[in-house]
Image (cartoon, rainbow, N blue to C red):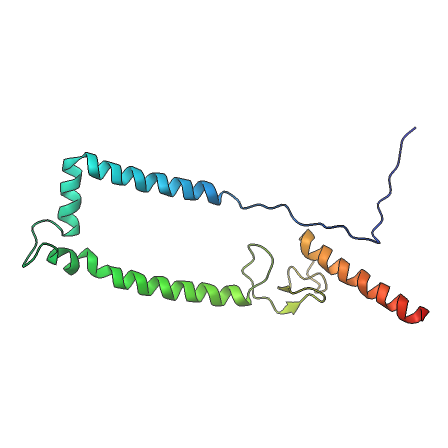
Length: 158
């Protein structure tokens, strides 16, 4: 005999998409290894250390030891700081208005009722586009609809 199990959609379970951080930790480890290897090569090799010091401007300075550094590569520190701050500000602004679906950069105009999500027309289940495939967002929407139906039943029965 075969057992058949029926799953009922009346009570949604706690369904969340799997936690996938991608490989962020491997990228971080890789960057740290490259930086440590670069510093180790600079410390060990006198020739490379001399070349690095010459081209960053800390060797054979002008009026003082670090004059060439601050006149050369060191003067870019302020520019890099400014560009980074503007880039982070733009990213924060874009992130505030874009679709809440993971890795979607479209602008979100459609709030999903019962949830704090604002979605683009591609990911919103109520907007005809044929593309809402994100289980977590749909389960939240399903929970809201079931809660509305239960509330409606309690109003009509009282």
